[in-house]
Image 1 (cartoon, rainbow, N blue to C red):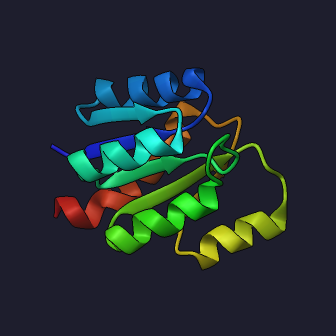
Image 2 (spheres, rainbow, N blue to C red):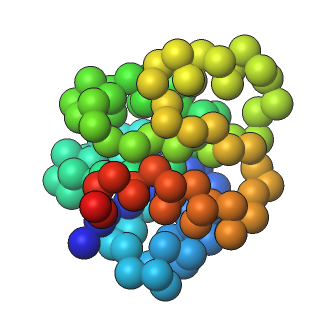
Length: 122
């Protein structure tokens, strides 16, 4: 079973994404702080990470670096309300696999994930 980690300081976003992917058979973990996210990441080894950029304890871009250093093959999808194009470019430069702006549609999230993992499933 493919594991997903959702990291966002808004519990509603975590719950929404968890509901979307639990319904279609993924194992989903959530974290509202970077510290908790790092603990879950280490323990569960998720293949896909939804990561907010604006976090209260550690910047999401710094967390992205940590995830990619620990597991370069993990798929990190940045999910943010930021409209700053420089932030998007920085995230992609740091090897984010996708950059999605809030608000997002459920169908779009599913489509992005299925596209990103099709090589894993084959």
